[in-house]
Length: 177
Image 1 (cartoon, rainbow, N blue to C red):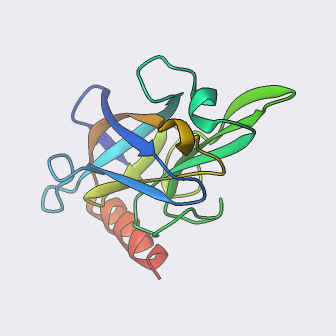
Image 2: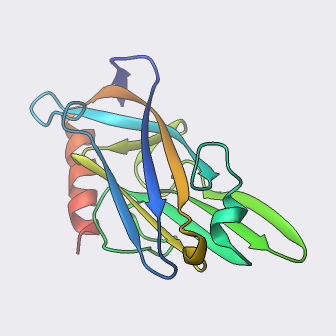
């Protein structure tokens, strides 16, 4: 199905959430990696979500200022907000839950995507952007805090057969509706 053109490499983007209950957005440009003419796609092997506070290394709980839930998703289509887990555009998702009285937990709820056409080693992306959406239920705005989430996408470039590239492109277009 796919022939690897590169070894695995990492793309990163930081999402900075500054307001509670307001979707925050960032993108990763894939224009240099995806080529329709050569049937070249990006194969996403894994996605890591690293939560930090306002400064590097600061606990994310300081930015939340109280019990909160944070959800960050990576999609290959711009949905304009968080999506349900059955959305074919969803590539990966991570969550951070903090109960000021009891616990802090972090989980990746989709890692990597296994819904679409791909291999057992990841998800093929033929779109020219990855879209990152984040939402937190609490931000400590009184202390001018920011909740940062660094998204690390481990990927490689692959060449697909004409049939496979077309199938993935059609699926992505159909998911856009």
